[in-house]
Image 1 (tube, rainbow over the protein chains, first blue to last red):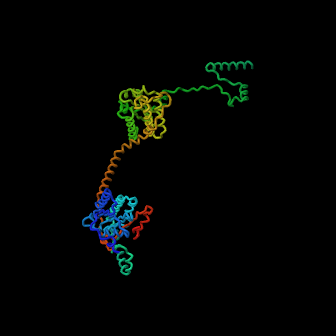
Image 2 (tube, each protein chain N blue to C red):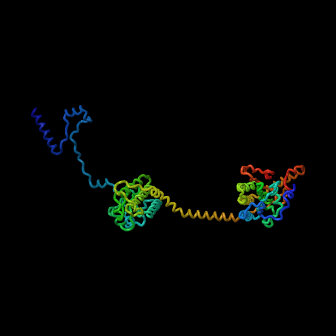
Image 3 (cartoon, rainbow over the protein chains, first blue to last red):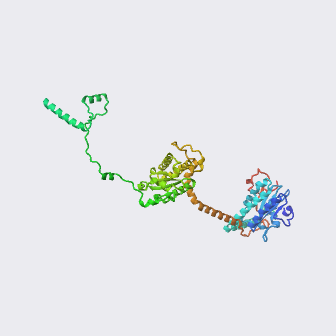
Length: 192
Length: 337
C-alpha cells in the first residue's frame, strides 16, 4: 500500500511542534518548545520535532513517522541539514500510541532501545493525559542519551564505523534474497 | 652448811636489790603458777617464761648519719625562679622547664584558653617535675596574694607532672572569701581522682584539668561571678556537691577535639570551597558544551531518503499494560486498537 495514498499528500511545511490533535495548551507548548530548543542548542547538527494528530482507523504509527520524516519539510530544522538529522516524536491521542523515529545521521549511534527508553520516561505522564510533561521528560532523556552517544562516537569512532559497515552487508544480503525470492518483498511493510 | 646457805641467800638478795634500784623487775613465774596455767589452757605458748631483759649498748646516731639517711627532693633550679614566680603569668600554662612535650603543652594551653573564654575564673597551671620542690625562700604559699591580687579572679594550680596527688590548688584573693575551703578541697580531690585513674602522665594532666575546669564552673556559681549566679546556692558545707550537668561534662571532654577541629576548619573550608567552585565550573562547561556526531555514510534503506523508520512505538492505552511487555517491538504493535 502506498504511504502517500494512506496518509495523504505530504504537508508543505511543518513547524517543529505541530499539535494537530490540540492536546497542548499555550503554556505547555512553551515548555515543550524550550526542551526542543535545548536539544538543538547542545547538538547543533540535530533537530527534534513533535507531531500530534489522529491518524484514522487504519493508522500505523510506525509507518506514519517513517513517512513524515522522509516527506515533510520542517521550519525549525538547521540550515543545510536534511531530515536525516531529525528526531521525530509522533503521538496519536485517540489510539493512545506514540513513536519516535530518527534519521540516517543518527542511525549508527542510536538504538531502538534508546528511543524506547525515552518514550518510557513519558509513559506515566501520558497515561494521565499530561502530554506536555511527557514530551518534556522524553526530550530531556533524549538529550542526555545523545550527548552520551556523541562522546562515545568521538572516543570509539571505529566501533560505529564497523556498525555502519555491518548494516551495509546486511542490506546487500537482503537485496540478494529479494532478487532470488521476490515473494519475500510482500513481508516487508512500509512505503517504497 | 646452814651458815653457807644463809650467806648465799643474802648475796643474792643484795644483787637483786641493786638491780631493782635501776629498773622495775619483770614478773617471774613460780613453778606452781606456770603448771596451773598450762593445765587450765590459758597459756598459749610453751616457751619458758622470759627472763630479765638484757640491755643493748648502742651508740646514738651521729649528725653525719642523720644527714646521709635523708634524700632531699630536688628543687626548682634557680634559673627558672623568675620565669615561674616573678610576675603574674602571661599565659595560663607556666612551664619554663619544658616538662610537657610541645604537643601536650599546646593542647593543654588550648584547653586553658578555651576555659578562660568560657569562664569568669581563669585557670593558671604551674607545671613542675614530679619530684621537684618549690624552694622555701620563694614562699609559694604567698604566691596568690603576691601575683593574683589584681586582675581577673583566678584558680592557681601547682601540678607535679606524673604525680597528680601532689597537686595544689589556691585561689586569688578575690575568691577566697566566697569559696569555702571545703569546696576547694573537694575540687582538688575530685580532680586528683580523675587524674590517677589514667595511666599516662599526659592523660593524667588532661583529666585533671578537665575536672578542675568543671569544678571551677561551680566555684564560679558559688562566688556569683557566672551567668548562673542568680541560681540559688544551696550548700557550701561538707555535703557532696551537685554533679555537673551532662552537657557541661560532655563539652569539657570534647574540648580537645573541638580545638583540633577549629585548627582544621579553615583549610577544610577552603578545600570545600575550591571543590564547589571546581564543580560549578565543570558543570557550567558541561552545560555550554556542544556535541557533534561524525557523519558516516549510511546506505538508504526501505526507500527512505532521510530515515529508515528506525525507532520504538509504545502504547499508553492502559495502565495495566506494562512497559516491559512492549520492549520487544513488533511491526503491528502500534496498530490502532
